[in-house]
Image (cartoon, rainbow, N blue to C red):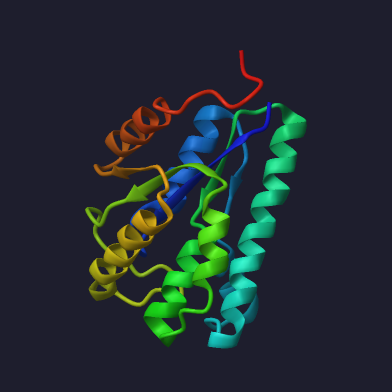
Length: 182
């Protein structure tokens, strides 16, 4: 059974990390942290335009590593706290650089499902990579546009606390079993 990748995507401060951790705990499977946060912590700065591709590719590599671990552990899922597609969107939004979309779109087809965390949580400062509440609506619009462009299956996730987790679990329940499941 190949573990299914489930992407948690949303604008900043929409609960992606909290949801990824909760789902991984619920299903006893791996989750992939957001590589941008790792980059910022290591470098004590946000990435430049030239480093955006590195962010995208490292997110992808982290997902591959987690998927291999999940396969060894025979778990059904890997929850990805964001996706390469979000790197392309922010590269476009911040630097007007659309060059990462082709790669990001092709990688997005690997996800069995995308959970789109909505902007219904209060924005909170959380590290140096945060731009502010004012960017959430335009970024969310770009995410929806890109999910439509790639034809990715996705569900909107709203609510607070347990209600948010319940919405995600209901969306995951709509998935067909992966090949090899009985």
